[in-house]
Length: 228
Ligand code: TZP
Ligand code: MG
Image (tube, rainbow, N blue to C red; front, side, top):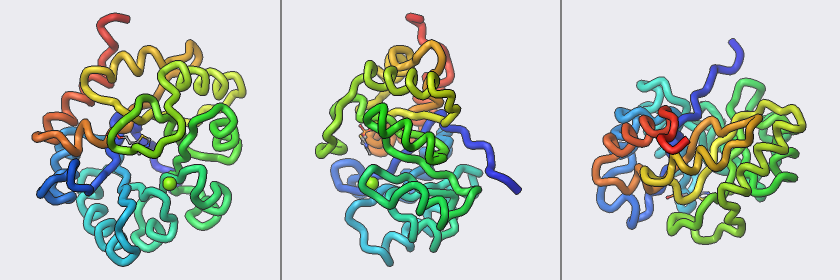
């Protein structure tokens, strides 16, 4: 079968905490975002216990499959295996990439967080499918980020990956919204390698109309910035 081609253009990362989700259900917000065109979904729930997480993941996977969009699980390789979804996103303090690959197999989509050139090169070398580069800008959604790297930091990482000859896919994350997304894509691009997409939490999850928010963001990601 082989690994399916993945569209990284607009990557939705979930957050069920009250300031973001309010009293709406996670499933309904994710489905609205899918209708608006998100191309990849990550279930990122820091507080759920394992049984609950598996149950939420099963529910979301039933929805993402209908839209033909891959579902990845943050941190938890065991949950991805239990659910049979398309992959995981792992941070620097989570299970190591080679163990995750061994457990999930060659066709799983495995993404790794990278904040530095070293982390990025190691993940590329280790066979990550994509890098989640960031944090680009400080964000209330994740306050414990140690590394705010800005677009200059993203560009530096992209340049070093290109120099080393890797074709690993890339998205960036952190503080991305409708008003800055095109500038971020433009300023982050190295002449040899640009980003494949952007990952957002609040710009979609906290929007009063997640479908419209996703549609607008996707349109911006796919059209060249006017100031280019
Ligand atoms: N990793 C780095 S920043 C971040 C994660 C999961 C949260 C991004 O949230 P938002 O609301 O898109 O700024
Ligand atoms: Mg993690």
